[in-house]
Length: 346
Length: 272
Image (cartoon, rainbow over all chains, first blue to last red; front, side, top):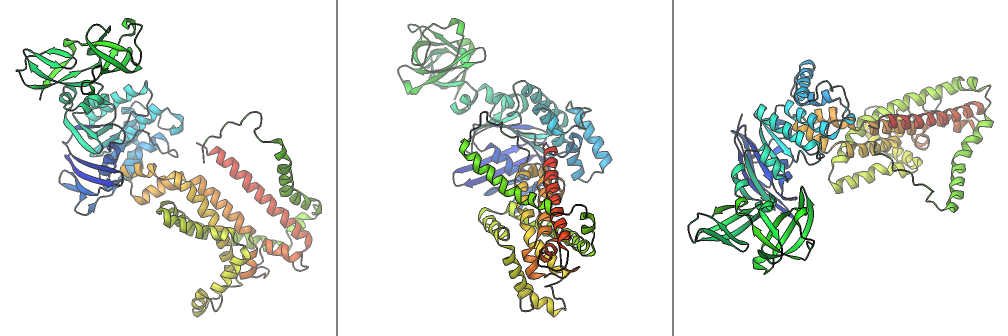
């Protein structure tokens, strides 16, 4: 097992990617970001399917890209699992999984035995004779995972592995991915636009925006205290700037109790559930910019009525407690629930 | 290849007036073939087909057709692969060159082949120097057939390769498969419907080839007289009897029909 190092730049007429990363052996790195941030392109470069304009990719001491060298994908030992299973339709499920071992020179019999064990590990035991067209998308992704792991890659790249799954299959496959990555101690990079994948699968997280790394750190740390408003928004929380004075951090949305010494600049992390929406007369006045249904209520984006720095808040509103006047353009009162926000200095 | 058909629009969206020319078109395409049938002496057909001249023509057509298809496969599969992967401008130029024999009158193709392989031709001079003269031999028949049939194979296979390769080939590579393995185990099997269709079409085109053969190979019974040449000769009052020629003509129609229907059914079964 070796660490993966990469420092790559890729320039295209309308797009620039510059990323430096290191994944220690056996660890999982999540790369999150909005569409077109360059996440998939980064994986293509690591897998050897695209050439970077400059930079290097190393696996331990082995140079895969760099110094004019470009090791082809089949000799990298880097597997790829995408959002579509891309199972080979002319082969049975067992033959699909046996493809990697066969390509590595394993004889037919042992390769099929190994494939059968992998199918069992992903919960597809006994279905080896089926054709890919006869199984569901979730089952297809299970087989695709078995196929990728059966090739015993040194690094596994997962490109939005759950994006094409329906709401029912996604949690199961996410669980399976986590279990198998841990059990096989596979070094992996998971690309996702969903922060949940990072939280449940990865040790470290890297946030990509317009081809640049905007944040990088331990998952727990970044989730608890995102350093940039961009990351916070990606996670569905709002970062509100403030300054500590007299046992409170003062923000445009009101004071939040805190022990931070006077004068220090702070960021208050406000999850949508920490925003209390009341009548117009209570709290800080805010205008409703948009409303949309969310799990267990209504998600609202609120903008500060005085237009203070265009400050915005994401709020979850309980439909049962909403005054009849809640609509786009209406003015409401906003309070922050001190028990549900957290304050970070810096 | 396996894309589901869109549901038929109910109530017919075509202006009814257009039905008349459509019916005329069908008649134009099928009536001539039907008109062949009453002319055939059915009782004598088995005999007509097994006359020595007819048998020689059938045998020659089969042998040259198969060899020509073999040449098409050996040359056409690599060309289709190159075409499917070539960058835009290169592919565009190549595609025009490959399509040219398809739209060219075969007679012109035959003339061109004759000048290329004739005694004064670029290649003819070289082959004559080593004691080989291609024109008016069985090899020239194969040459003419390959010339007209190759585009069918290449274009049919190229279309299939475009949809077959791509992401699947990339996945196979990340699983450790080198270029040959990807080609052999993924790309070609996935393009198999296109390859089979192209092969069958190329064979049908080769067996039916007339114009180019006439120019470059001539009409020597047993050596260069294929079925179409035999039919043509019969109606010029020589060689095969007219009864044999008619029977051979119907045979060609039947073979073509069987090929088309077979392809259709096979494609439907392979539509996974």
